[in-house]
Length: 425
Ligand code: HEM
Image (cartoon, rainbow, N blue to C red; front, side, top):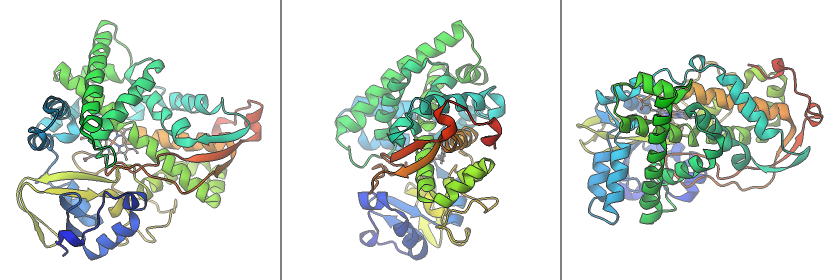
């Protein structure tokens, strides 16, 4: 087992973040449980270890207290304390029993069957974003489509006017610099000061949103959260809304953008999915495995635990690299090949375990409708330029931009919509 810090790769370097799989493959084979100096913690890369760790109650997600302690002496103490207090209410940073209380409030909120008209609404947003584009041209798929789509869907689920979505996006981006481990913008004011200002503004807006819903109840996610989260304080409700905005935003954007990249690089797959749009759901599942938007999650050992013959000491950080586990050849045949015929895919992209992603049904639905919509709207989608660059973050794996050339499908040029059966799954 490799425990030598100096021989461990720098997992924060832009070269690794742009193309992590050669390093992940090497680690999985040679050093599946290794101490990584660049991350200041242990790194697990095998599917069996990552799955076991996700289910292991001895590994805690309560990281905010420790973060506050480590930063409390430095610059901008008030910002750090405010961020730590806010994020301490996010269910994803809570162990039982508090985790159960926070999760219970939105247990069913994102199941498509519980949100009437969700599928129709997502389709309408896809059309609304794609219809105004000309017969042919260029676009950045991230900025023009993959980013606004989940932002609009979330704003609508929350019961907020669309006009506010640019603001929501800015807040979410600023908060992301802190939460997602931005390795480029590390200056205090950008990383913590900006995030704290965004979090304060977001909290004020969401307190007002809660009041609006109390005054005139509606049929949306915020109302459901108020009903099922009656046991929570107003601050907990508001911090949950902030978390959901954030969780549902960046992740889905990156799944859609990476998915489109796979399509434009695989004309045979694209042709097949055009002919069989019902198989897009299987493609989404395989895309989650190949390029999961959450690259890694991390935990803190509550007590000494053993993984792969190595003892991880109480208090040490453990990084579970989901995207390395998803290409483990002991679980997936030909792991680097995208194959939509795999059947049941045991990927770990939604973190199976106590913190299994509550937004998984919504994310799957948005990605499926987005890809079906793009295939129906365009007869040509082509990569405009390379190389592509990936976001400088440890946690999120996503493209900064995806420049494409497109040509609209004939039946879309005269405004005719394909028959709904062409795009349903
Ligand atoms: C492809 C898109 C998505 C991916 C890959 C993803 C992935 C994840 C992962 C890995 C976790 C667990 C984090 C951990 O254990 O530390 C998680 C938790 C969570 N996600 Fe997602 N997510 C996605 C989309 C969404 C969406 C659209 C929403 C809601 C709108 C959402 C809401 C949540 C919530 C509420 C949790 C916390 C669950 C808990 O702590 O009990 N996610 N997600």
